Length: 114
Image (tube, rainbow, N blue to C red; front, side, top):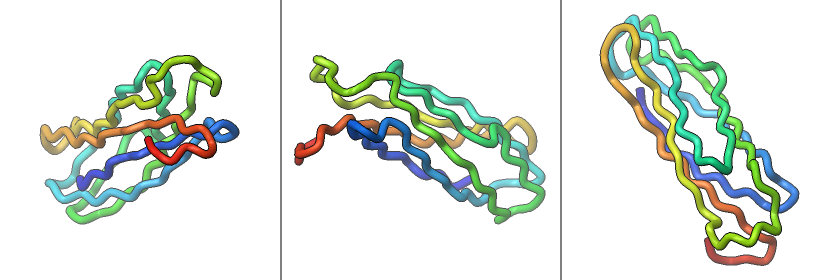
């Protein structure tokens, strides 16, 4: 699999973000990958589907990731960044683990820096 990274910016009226990605099987086939999500405590990360199945090399598949902030704006913490990762683990056809890092930022309107 090729693997994308994710950069998510939450704004006051936008506490849910959705991203769709296409991956290509560059390994052996047939193969099956299952998702493992490491979410920071302040964000729900939901990946659909939770399994990708490939019948041949160079086959493409799509998946959607929904990021939901568990905190509203007005929090007093100066921690406005969080990190996690999404991993596709090959459970059939190999032993690969393909990781996509996730960087999350909460940004108040008018802020210029992260």
